[in-house]
Image 1 (spheres, rainbow, N blue to C red):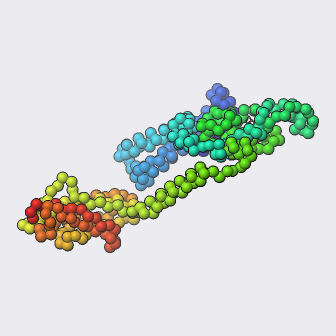
Image 2: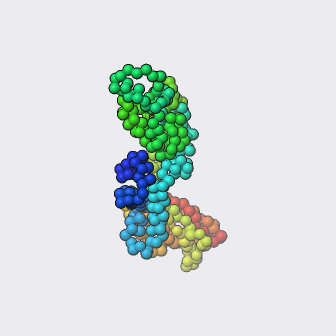
Image 3: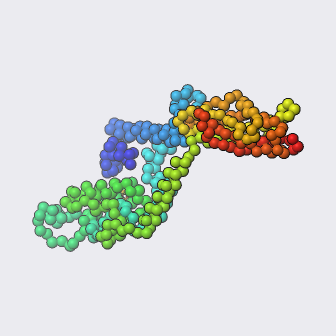
Length: 354
Ligand code: SF4
Ligand code: SF4
């Protein structure tokens, strides 16, 4: 809608746009067309950046923008492709993308019935339609003229002319309708000009117009509301219990135990952490079980930066008398700022007969 409003602001109404399209190229036409497309591309570029920030994170995007171009050729290519795709959709395909590509419209059509409120033509008031005649003009001025009874629709086709998907809403609710309300505005303008009440095309439902009953609460509406509430509650609950820090400790795949000195064995572990908070979190790993053992970080347990993931490695050394057969259960506690965040159980591989 934003793009259409910009187009209306620069080139005028749909009929004026058609006139402009059919005129030969001149300074004014060049100025209007080029300024429209420059604005369209600029907005597409902004939308592409926003979309990319949603996928890769705003900080990563700022890094791509502020670093030299040569270091992020991939990112620059992605932004350029996204910008051109959005530009093509907004400048060319428009509502065709809604009608042909987008699955949302198809899915929504399965929820629609004759009580659904949508942009609807009031056929009871509008029919039988007929052209606006001299007799109508005389009646408009208060004169008395005999003519066959007629509805309010003067068959001017303005609602069809402005429709971006090219449908005639007077034929009923259709799949192609994107509820842009352009036909409502066009018809209201006509009704005002001919001194009739506005709202010949308005938000209503087929049954509301047919029976004159404005709204009926049906089991279907209640069922949709219940499903919606369940979904909102589930998503809210999942957000509420979402762990701020996700931690995983695994024995390094493909490694076995190492014998250290005469009575000690060591295993190699990988620590993976995802910090979803906006603060850097210091991390400490402690051994809870068995009671004797030593943790040796390879490097150090440096803080996990906000909104980022980190992988660290450490070695756990256990004395022989703490081992039970070839697999010993070990339990770690993960602490941040002195607070236990999580306890993780995993295994320690040792010799068959320690
Ligand atoms: S704009 Fe209104 S009056 Fe004109 S054809 Fe459409 S419904 Fe009828
Ligand atoms: S609301 Fe009216 S103008 Fe817009 S798509 Fe539907 S029928 Fe066409």
